[in-house]
Length: 89
Image 1 (spheres, rainbow, N blue to C red):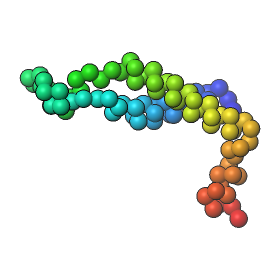
Image 2: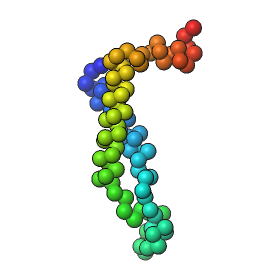
Image 3: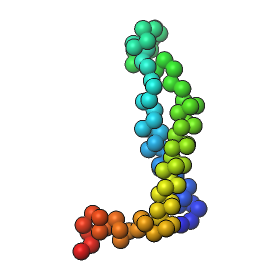
């Protein structure tokens, strides 16, 4: 696997994990009871983006590491996946 492919796959995994992590721990202004004038009541009070970016990086690195290990040790191949989905008989 080339280095470019590794970075591309990690990038995709990172974005998927980011969208999974974003809603954790978010309180809206309406829930907090302090809606600022001119803003949406559903806007987050304190999004804590730096912590979420850090968690996203750690979780996606672990997930990518597991996937890369499975690919390198030949536990995850196209033949395995196609037989799992019933494409090869």
